[in-house]
Image 1 (tube, rainbow, N blue to C red):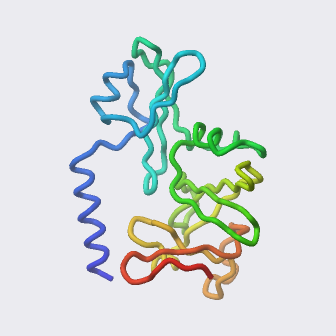
Image 2: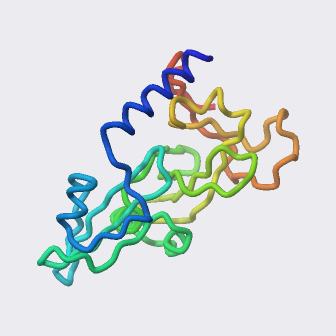
Length: 204
């Protein structure tokens, strides 16, 4: 266990030394400043009014996705965190995958549930709950359209299934070891998990 933790910390330090992580605190005035600070964006979105939005996602481990909208001259018109609560609340039933991707940016992972016919995208978002390791915002699609959204939570006792940097967590809302200590529960009854060290993909 200690070797796994040390390996994770080593990779974190390595990544932190070779890249600048996008932040909501940095205010830019030109596209050139953004590129100098963060490099090329994950994606460039062409808008109907001729402007361009640069997407800088920190998924799967970060909690923000910065969107910088610039005009044709490279002047920054606005910048926002696409994973802010007020933007998550804008996801509505009937939206397409492309519309959701444009609003929230790159998702963290995709899961498919045969029985419900749902394809679920999730994003690691701001976690404000004491005793919870991470909060995931989930968008559920059926036939390519949004049918609902939900949130799921990763608890300390899930750490063995959480994987390196929180990739593909296991989550069961009614495990005996948790009892009813935490009021926040996902409506999901099953969640696939992946442990990169010794467990293969499979579903419960």
